[in-house]
Structures are given as C-alpha cells and as structure tokens.
Image (tube, rainbow, N blue to C red):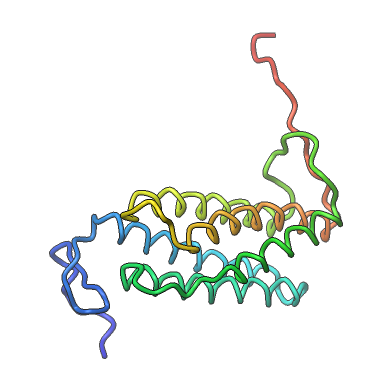
Length: 181
C-alpha cells in the first residue's frame, strides 16, 4: 500500500468503511487533534531519553489509549475501547505524583525543565481535543473517551509539575504584575 492515495487532494478523506468525509468535518478535527496529542506524547518520551522508564511506559500506555480512541472516533462511537479502568489509571497516577510535589496553592507559570514545559504543551492540545470532542459528538450521553481526555489533561498538568520536581527545577509562582506602575 502506498502512503499517498491522492484522495485528499480535493479536500476529502474516507472513514474505515471507505465512505468519503470532507476534511473540514468536526469528527476529522477531533481525530486530527487526538493524533497530534499522540505524536506530541511520543516526542515527550524522546525528550526523557530513557531517564524515567516508568513514566515513559505510562506515556506509551497513554499513546495506545489514544490509538484506541481514534478507533472509537473512526467507527462513529459505535464501539467503546476506552474504559473506566483507563480513567482510573490516570487518576491513580495523578494522585501518586501530587503526593510527591504537594498541593498547589497558587497559579504557576508553565516553565522549567523542557520535559515539564512540553508536558504542559501537550495538556493544551488535549484540552483542545476535549473542545473538538464536544463539537463532534452527536448526543448528550458522552462515551468514556471524553472523560479520559479530561483526565488526561489533568494528568499532563500533574506530569509537568512532577517532571520539574524530578529534575530539581523550582516551580515559578505567578504574581500580579502591575504594568501601570
């Protein structure tokens, strides 16, 4: 199979069933955002350079969950490959990391170690994915996929803070800056 099909040259692609879909469709925007987040997580793993294998394994699991979510999207949510257990794993990891670096008491600047700042960048991609999800999904009873995205954004936030902690980089607290002075 060739990488290029030339079908996209006219602004269309196709779903798993071969049905044409305009590239501007909300469902495709969602699919693309999930793919972007997945690729960004792969880059974050490469930035870790093998220094945090337990985190890299967790991120690899997240990538696989996002791949499964992509399948759910492709099949129009007629299947549900994201489970409550997937969400619970993220929550457990968030709690574990929070116990290490402590409760947040103020707003923080997104900065520090490059892995930490890139984790925050991924968080913003995932939040965009949540918004795309709500636009694309038809119905009110959202599948577990949306809950997973919400928790994944929380996880990426906590991971950024945790990576700063692991790399001995102090968090920078946000302070009010009066530009009128």
